[in-house]
Structures are given as C-alpha cells and as structure tokens.
Image (cartoon, rainbow over all chains, first blue to last red):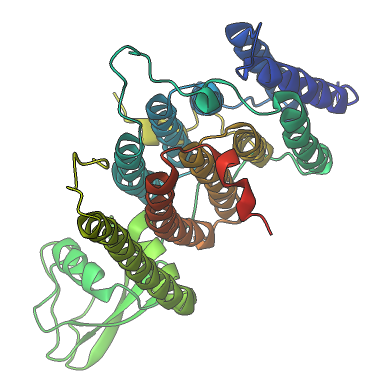
Length: 321
Length: 114
C-alpha cells in the first residue's frame, strides 16, 4: 500500500490540473462544472494517498469538509466572470481556512482572520470593485467586460501552477507522516509569567491570607511566602502553623493555564519585538502612501476642471462618478 | 453537545497529519498563481495574491502546531499586516489607473513593463 502512495499522489495532481484547466472560462466550449467535479476528484485522490500513507488513523471529517470548501471556493473565485462574486467566494475560502485554523488549535488566529480579512480587507476590495466599474450603457444591461469573461492562456497557466504543486508534492512523498501531537501546545504557565492571573486563583483554591506573596512558579508548583505567618484554612490543612517569613509550595490550581491569545502575545512581544515595530512602520507607510495617492487624484481632477474652464467650456456633466 | 474546537482536539476525531495541511496550503497557493496568470482584471489579480497569502499562512499555522510553538501564529499576524498595507496601496493605485483609462484590463497597461 505504501508503494502505491506516490503514484496516487501524482495521479491526483494530474487529474486536478486537468479539472482546473477545464474549469477556467474559455471562448467556445468550456465545461466548467465538469472541470470542477474532476478537480474535486483529483483532490480526493490526493487525500486518499495521504490517508493511506498516514496509517490507521484517518483525519476527522471536519478536515475534509473545510479543505473541500476552501479549495472549491478558491477555484470558483478564479473562474467566476463577475469580480464581486469572485470576492465573495474568496470570503468563503477565508471562512474555510479559519475552520482549518480551529482544527490546528489556533483559535485566536482563526477569529482574527475572519475579522481582519473577511471583515476589513475584503470589504475594501468590494468597495473598489464597485467604485471601478463602468457605468452600464442603457441598451446593454449585462455589463460583463470581455476581459472578465474569458481567461488568458488557461492551459499554459494551469501547467505552470501545477508544475509548482507537483514539486511541492514530491516533498510530501518523502516527508514524515505522523499525526500532529494530540495534546496540542503546552498550556501550562511558564516561569513567573502571568502572576496576576495565578494569584486570585491561588487565593480562591487554598484560602490564602491577603498578604501572601507569590515567589516563584516552577512547572506545576507554586512557591508562596507568608510575611505574617499562616495557620491553614478551610480549604487546606497544614501540619504545623507557618511562622512569619516562611514559604510553602502549592500545586498550581485548576484553570491556571495560558490561553491561546496569552501565548501568542508572549511570543509576539517576547521573541519578535523587532518584527512588531517593522509591521507598525509598514502600516504607517501604507497609510501615508494612500493619502498621497488620494491627493494626487483630486489634483488631477481639479487640473482638468480648470483647463476646461480656461478654454471657455463648462465643466459639463461629471464624467467620473 | 461539545463545541467544534473541543471535538476537534478530542480522541473522537483523529488529527490530520502535517502533510494533509501542507498539501491543502500548496494547492491554495497553486490556485492563487493560476488565477494571477489567467485573470485579466487588475483587482482580481490582487485578490489572487491574497489567496497565495492564505496558502502560506495555513502552512505557517500547521508548522507551528507541529513544533508546538506560536511563531507560526505570530507570522500570520505579520502576513495580515502586509496584506492590509498591500490592499490599501494597491487598491488606491488601481482606482488611480481606472480613472485614467476607464478599464481594469491588465493588458491596457502593458507599456508599463520595463
């Protein structure tokens, strides 16, 4: 069975290339629906090969659902003649890939993707698509332009794209095929970070006095100092009363784990502070660039209007909506 | 009734291998390239680059999950930043070009090549 895997993989890639080439719109006969079904069959063959390679445990159903939706919507996006629909299909792709992110235990990124990508960036795209469309002429209701209706060199482009995919697939043939770690990322609190989160949990779980101080977090145990001594509480009995200044080790209470967003934040500012600064500078530059471009546009229009006025013409009906 | 996240991490549903996610990400990238080459509408061409970003981001998250760290997530945050900056600038340019020639056909701007 292991022997057949590479052949199945490449067969799937070739079938997928055939399907994508058929699904792209062309002049004359273009069997788009048939092409989409063939491309889906190719993807199914690839998943069959990968599943055989992975051994007894096949992935859960959600992985297949999300990847079929995502790749299918991506294919429809590049083959749909109407730009607005293409953008909407891209939103579907984003929703599907945020589902895949959820399966990969990246909850924060899944929702950030929906909010930022589908909510902000794609809406900008939709605005510009609607802004930059020719006004429909009265006798011509269907305003699909020729360059949207037919794709450019579908067969050659598909060959180029799938040559790349085949090269990447050859990496998959030799790659390791263990399932991802079941437990997911380590969610224990590391080091003395997040003491403010642990302190209330400790107080609630063990009934510590208000002046108790957290000294150290080491693995799953916490060391707490008692400046004015302690005689135990309802929640926990101790063998002898602690004298002032003594310390005692406790188990980390339930719920003292790091959330996904806390871990991402620590990685972001702890390990990649320079990247964060550079991202901020890039955003600032993009904002400045957009402002300058917008100014130039209004200057062009004003120049045109004043030129028309100098010629003694009226500005006439507004050409640019 | 458990939520999807708990179900996905539980024993009931076996996790997919890294290769599954890498293949989906590679396929998404390839579809993005094909779209960039075949579509002739400037806006859709930019949208296809966003699709390629998506493919790269999925690979990064999958690798982060494989190595059990969060660098992949952090780099997807940077990808989102770049995508937002690119969308703002590129779309401003596209509107600028559209007002000059009243068309979004990329072939109309072929003289821009070096």
